[in-house]
Length: 258
Image 1 (spheres, one colour):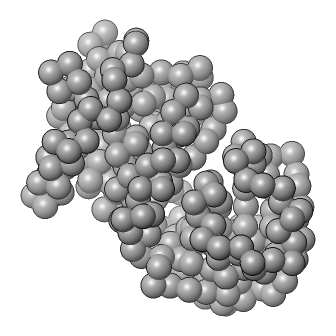
Image 2 (cartoon, rainbow, N blue to C red):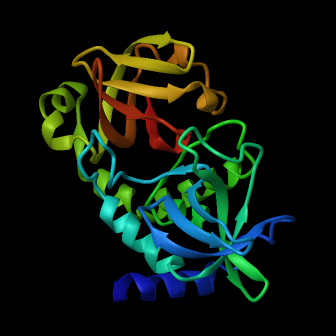
């Protein structure tokens, strides 16, 4: 923990303030850290809120159907080193709560009237992926820029994925081993299938698929143009009903297309 604390202090000196304070926010103190994107905050108005960070997705540590994912514990410890016991502000977007009743917020770390947004810092250090979920899209571009910085510097998930290059068939064959891990996959697109909520790019060999949520689709080019092309992508492997899936949340995950 000392190493994470020292890194956190250094980062805050370099990055504070990342943004100006939001116009309206609820102050409080972080009393518990669940993982890389969920904390418990005792607010100044007397409530205790389980807070899910808006706009990002960190590796799982407590998912009921998945084991602890790669970088899950590291993301949780890093988040803890930044916020546990600290004064914070909760900035809200259009939707205040998720379907589990958690408060959705951008978490700002207070520092004498200025602060760093922890959501952004988790992405910039490679401990989380951008995860757009309408209607809460206020800082989407900020998270995409942070994701690009993490890629350029090879931090976190990027350092893990660069040394692991798979074909879709290999991902399928080694799913028990690679599930929950970040990899690079060279993926020749055979077809594109669209449903109500997501777009699926299916490979020509193996049962692995690339998944893009409809809420993220506009940032990518026409998916039909990818048919017949080989994409080199970075992402986390997740078991799906039809085989292993890799979620594409941002174009930065596509390293090449030819």
